[in-house]
Each structure stands twice: as C-alpha cells, then as structure tokens.
Length: 385
Image (cartoon, rainbow, N blue to C red; front, top):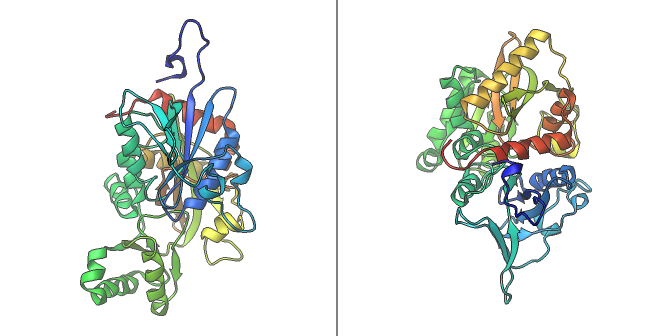
C-alpha cells in the first residue's frame, strides 16, 4: 500500500495517511517507549500525515493520549508514563479485528463508543515483551493493518537472545560464549542450574554478564565479578524474565550499526562506538538514558573495519528476516574480529539514542528517518510475504 492508493472520492482531495503511534506497554521498558514516542510524534511531518497517539498502560489498557511530545521526556531522572498523558483514566481504544475495517474506536464507561476514524499504518514504538516480541505484530496481522518494523517471526527472534544467537550461528555469524537457564531447570533443580553457571565461569572466566533472556534497554543486567555476586544477579534478572542468559565477558570495543529498509533493500549506517562509561561498570540503563553517556559517531574504525561491520549488520538483518529497521550491536575483539552481541528490532529512538544519531551522520535526518519507516510500512502488505 502506498500513499497514492489511499481511498479518496472525486469531490474531495486525497486524504493524508493516518499513522497510529502506539507506545508504552506492559514491559519494564515502558518509560523508554514513552520517550521514544515523544520523539517520533515530534518528528512526524504533519503536512504529510495525520497522527493518532495511543498509549498502552503498564496494566495493559489502551488509552487515547494527548499529542504533546514535550510531556514525554525524562524529567528529574524519571521516565514518563502513559498515565501521565492519557486523556482519560477509564475506557480504552480498540483496534479493528476485521481486515476489511480499519476504524479505531474509543469507549468510555456509560458512553456510546466513539469512532476515531481509519488507521492506515501503525508505528509501534514499544520495547520489550508484549509489544516488540511479535505479540502486537500478530494482532496487527490479524487486523490487516500495516505497521512499521519487523513481522512476527523476526520480532520474536529479536526479543529472545537465546534464539537470536542460534539463528545467527546457523547463518555463520560469530557470537560469544553463553549459557541459558530455563525456568523449568531452575524450578526442578536449582543447585544444578547454579552449577551450570559456575562450570561455565570455570571454562570462560569471570566476569560474567547475567541477563533477562527477553528484555532490552540493559534492564536487569548485572556484571558479576565472582561467585559471591551470582545469587543477587540471578534474582535481578529473574525479576524481568524467568529465563536468564549468562554471557562470558568479551574484551574489545563496543560497536553499533543501524540498518534501514530502503526501496531497493536494507542499507547500513555509519557505525558508532560506545566508549566505557566513566561512572558505570558497563553501558547499563543508567549510563544509556539517565546520564546520557555519549557515543562516538562515526566510530573511529579503518575503512575496512567499517565496511565489514556494515556488511555483518545487513547479514544479521537478513538472517532474522527483519523489516524496516534494526540496530545491530557488536564487539570488535582484540583479535580484530567482529562478534555480534544482539540486534534490536525496535531500537530506542529517543533524542539521545544511537540509532537516529548514526543515521543523522549518514545523511538521514530524524524526520526523514521517520518518514522512510512509515513509507516502507505503507509499501508492504500484511500476511505472508
């Protein structure tokens, strides 16, 4: 579907495509999603698109929200909430489940449901489970509504760090050593699960990074220097996901690269480098979003290294069957090899996020980036493709 194919009548000029920006959600990345939505809402060209902001609260209620991006920023080290900008504390927004009907309806207790008009494309800027992991994408596929970003499979693979690594390995991409502890292992034999991690440390050495297997924004991650800190790290990760991933520390430089879908296929941005933050043990949530540790754009790499990481970023995009956009994160190890750490199918797009900064340095401004993502979604159909 393209802008030219939108419904119109001979008596009226063609209407603008209507974009529903959906944000918030039930995951621990709720606040960062709201910040990303504020940046996207501010960047959308209102002469070209109509916009409908829809927030999902932490409890899962879909709410019509104010179109006020300035209220969706980090203030006094606090991330915003959907409830801060929701127009009502009751009722909710309902997407159509009939592929022949794209009209969105809002209902309030004791009132007749009100039609908000048709939506032509959804821009889902949710991060983490219940939004970025294929669940929302599946709903939109059932509804027949085009959307920005990857489909069900790629979104699910991009959310689960274990299966992401398995896919990359099967396509010949190099990943670092890791071990997974599944919920059933922990529940049935906790001592054996702990021993599995300790044996992994014996093989690969300390420190280890203990992570929720299906979370992002560096939430719930702990750098563990010895066995004494392992219990607390496991508990911290399990607060966000009962399935945990333990990775060996890789010594090298952190390099990121953006991928964006153009009409002729995916292309890579100039890469960036994340230097070790001065006030943090590693590049954690606080360093990323609260203290705004600056990245280096473009990364100080040789032309050969730049070309290699760009190639690998596009290879990762294709390996996971991604669409729209991806941020691919690598380590450039001491032996000069790139090891892929993970991809993010809906990377943070806050004003300080690396994905838009990399594309800005590549020659694509933030408003142009948002427009290209919307146009790519309008070109695609839903369903098998």
